[in-house]
Image (cartoon, rainbow, N blue to C red; front, side, top):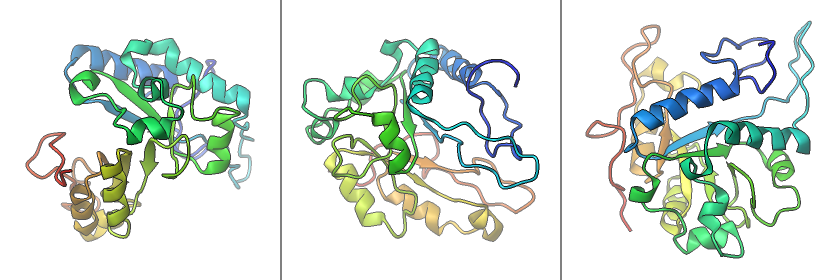
Length: 241
């Protein structure tokens, strides 16, 4: 933790026992696995920026993610991954005026071209992603995508974590060409109740990425587990064009 660089922490001062405390160490593990499995489907790494102060006695003051810190995030990503190993906003945007325009025109690489590559998405509210965008029209030069609204010039990736309530919106976004991440479960509720309703909705929505905290059951809660219908880690789009 005393070494220079970004740290990987779930909740500062409270939940900080990450497998790899340094961001770049985590990235090196991902890259090593990726190089050993060059045919893998594209890996999406979603991250949050911890800058909300912890209201606890003795908590360490958190530094804000200003423009300089945002540049440092990109620098650390690019210190580990070569540009050819990443799916970046520039790669998707190509010669289009905006990232959104490119996505609506089918600008994402094909699965064949995306195999073996990694992409990053900053999952933060507009006030934070605005700092990352700066004066850019979209995300020119940036290493990561951001959580956007469908109408934004930077729109390419969307976090829509409520697959039951947002089923129609997820399907429409995917059909339009956006990459969507949703959740099969959250905050232990599904695990405690062995409730698969949210999971079923998530997998049926067509979202390209579905997150879970329970790839394996947690013995503290019961048998709940999130598994892709049919098994495996990926499948063809269940919704279709």
